[in-house]
Image (cartoon, rainbow, N blue to C red; front, side, top):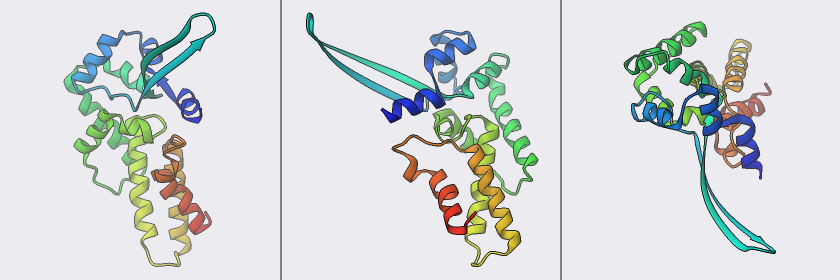
Length: 198
């Protein structure tokens, strides 16, 4: 199953996340309820039907939650912070990465925080951490601006576009097999490389 293979190689199960952080499920769920820890990016509901020769049919249902690999790092930081300081910590990391990349956008940090907490950025960035989120969003803005410019692009514009595409490629997740054709990676990395021969 390609989805399971993808999740097992690019994400942490909730059990793996808890083991890495050295905490219990109750503490994780309390941090999520407090609005400082992201939700799982993927939730699988598994219905297992088994039929054995001796004991006959058997049915089980399970739910498995998958978190971005960077979730263990974020969780470790949370354990050292007061809950009310988590949003500011997120913003400082996000803005520091933007500044490192030369800025050029005015992010809606409250909206970014909301997407972070919902698990969205765990799904579409490699780490799910503020630094990858900032890089992804900045790269997309730059790609959109440059690809909207009249063709043909100047050499300087092509170089800036190639740089933005490479930044997005680095920050963006590969996406699950069923998501790839509709993903930001396909639209802003694969298609830009094909269109401009980058």
